[in-house]
Length: 105
Image 1 (cartoon, rainbow, N blue to C red):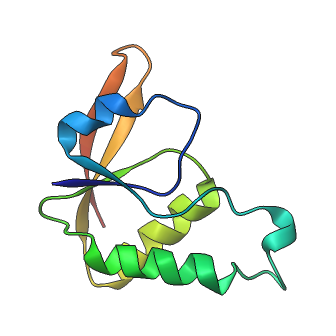
Image 2 (image 1 turned 120 degrees about the horizontal axis):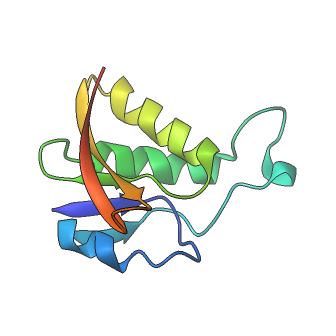
């Protein structure tokens, strides 16, 4: 099992390791000055596309943390591969930990 994380953050992600090995897809956020003509830079898109193709909806998790633009794009990529169900990890402040949620579209 792998936990796909779009980029490193200042948050302690170690509790997510109980769901699998953390795999970081990108180096950081996509900043406004990197967006050209309303498009995400190809190097980001290409790395995310490769990760989406490797994402196994049966065994892997997508950690919902970080840049909302990247979260939206990665989700769209996974769904575009005709995947109607996948798993995410969401942090719960009260429980002080991550829990799995199955997303069905």
